[in-house]
Image: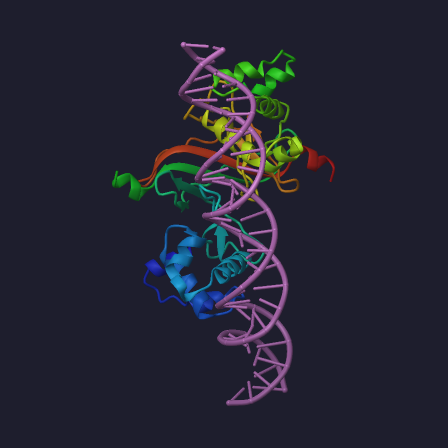
Length: 152
Length: 152
DNA sequence: TCCAAAAACGCAACTAATTTGCGTTTTAAT
DNA sequence: ATTAAAACGCAAATTAGTTGCGTTTTTGGA
């Protein structure tokens, strides 16, 4: 279950509890950042976040918060068309400090360049081949997202 | 069939013919760059190329040659651990100007960070789901490559 | 509630990677 | 041989991300 589902279900979300449970400080910015992630089904670029908070927050603070969130298993890096840093929320239970397990695929839209997590599609498990030791596989899909598909 | 296979088969390769057939000029540097790609089974970083050619060539020239090679369907971008530009040769017949078709997977080594093309593994075709229009899928494998596997 | 330690923050400066502008040289095509 | 197009080199600019350090906020125990 993803964090944003809690939100969708109109449960009273305790962002602060989540931060504490992951060992992260409850500063105003970090609470707002977590809320932003929870309210967005799209992955977020560093720049999306900087734009959202405007001059309220320094970009260095954004980079450091994202680094901490990622290290503590709250968010994960997703592929980006232009190789920039881009993140989505992790699954609620599956990730923790130093342990990221992602059993979903990523979809990149050719039009808006956004990356989405696709929970329904599980990447195939590939057995080891010709001397390579394969530890993990990930599937990246490309095309037109729901929004761009319908407005074009 | 990949270009480097021609090489392996000890056929007399006409790099110049290949460049011409793709609509690229046959300058000394571009011939040498194509030869470098043909002789390498690993993908190449911009920096690998800059180091290889030393002070013989300007980095801007490298970036521009790679851009042209990619646009003309001679090489393709492969994923890189640190989000840097990294390229491999395309399949001989399948790619051309504005049309890249890649039916192989990519393997990233956790130790040496190199990316390899894995011809044997074809990414699954995913049917369209929930409003998304999926045009392409790519599979990224991670683990230890042959070389790192055997020396550790 | 008070206090010290740890974590987060802001600012400025820095680094790495890539891009742009422009004048010069090389290549292609006739 | 001529000329247009493409490639090249250099310098400067841009973009994305990082580092150092002094200040502020948060945390956790007395």
